[in-house]
Image (cartoon, rainbow, N blue to C red; front, side):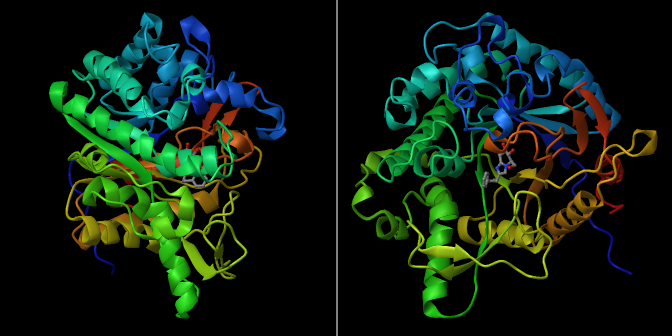
Length: 448
Ligand SMILES: OC[C@@H]1[C@@H](O)[C@H](O)[C@@H](O)c2[nH]c(CCc3ccccc3)c[n+]21
C-alpha cells in the first residue's frame, strides 16, 4: 500500500494560459500591435500560416471559459495581460478598454472562487517598443516598470499573486539567439543584452510593487534539469554549461546576485562586463518562485554544436511528446528539490506543466480520449508529492494548458490543452485528462 499523497490543504490547483495564445482580437478596442501580431503576419514564421487573430476567441468567450474552469473545480487560473491592450504604444496613453477587459475577467474569476494569478509579460512586447530597441534598449526597465505600476494600481485590490516575466530564457534564446520566436533575431551579441535587460526590468517592476503592492510577486522561469550522458569529463562539463545557460543564468542573478561563470566561457567576447548596480536591481527579494517544468535533457559534449557545444541524447525507452520532449516526472522532483538546495527554502509554484500529444478526433458522445496526457499528468503530480515529502514548500500547480491554443511558431497543431478546442467552431470539449484533473483537484491530490 503506497502512502497517501499529502498536499497542503490550501494548495492552489489550476491551469495556465497566455494572452496571445488564447485571446484573439489582438487589435480590438484600441489595442496596439505586438511583436507577435507582427511576427504572425510575416510569411513562414508560424506553421501553416496560423495567427493569434482569433485563437481561442477568449477575448469574447472569457465568461464561458471561466464557467468551464468552475465546472472543473479549478482553484486558480494563471493568465497574462497583453501589455499592448493597456498601453497601445507601450508607454504613454493608457487604453481604458484594455484595462476594463481584464477587470471583467478578474471579477468573474473571483465570483467563481478562482484565484487569479497574473503574468505581466508573456512574450507579447508592444511593437512600438520593439521599434525603439525593445529588450535591447536599457530604457525598457523603466518602460516595463511604468506598465507594471498601472496594472498594480488597477488590480492589486483583487490579484494576490503577480508574476513579472514568463521565462526570460525562452524570450532570449528564441527571440534573439535562434530567431525562432518574435522578434526573430539571430545574434549572439544581442542575446546577453536582451537577457540582462529582461532581468533588470523584472527587478524594476518588483521595486514598484514594493512601493504600492500588498500581496505577492515572483518570477517564472523554465527549468530543464540537465543530466550527463556519461561520467566522461567532457560530458560532465557540457552538462554544466547547459545548466548554466538555461537554468542558472536566471536563478543565480536573481537569488545569488551574480551570473554563473560559465556564461563568459560560452559567449566569450559577446558577454559584456555588467555594472554591479544592476545586480542590486535584479536580486530584489521575491515572495515566491514560479517554475515551468516540461522535460529534462541528457547531455553530451558536441564541439560542433554552437554556442553551447552540447547535444541532447535521446532516451530509447522513454515516451516523447509531440514537441519532442521526454516525459520524465523524476526531473520535476529533482528540479524542485534542487532549487531548494541551491537557493534556499521559499514558496514555490509550478506555474506550467503539461504535454502535447496527438488527440484523436472526438470519440463518440463528445469524449476526447488522451491517455498519454493522463499518464503524464499522473506522473508529474506524483512527482510533486515526492518533492513535498522532501521538504519543498510547494504552494500550487498550474497545468499547461486549460485550452488547446496557439503554440507560438508551431501554430495550432501542437495541442497542450486538457480541454479540446475545435478551432472551426470554437467548441470546447473537456478531454479525459480534464476529467482526471478535476478528480485529482477535488480530492486535493489523493486520487491519483
Ligand atoms: O510549449 C508549451 C508552453 C508554451 O505554450 C508557453 O507559452 C510557454 O510558457 C512554455 N514554456 C515552455 C518550456 C520552455 C520552452 C518553450 C519553448 C521551447 C522550448 C522550451 C513550454 N511552454
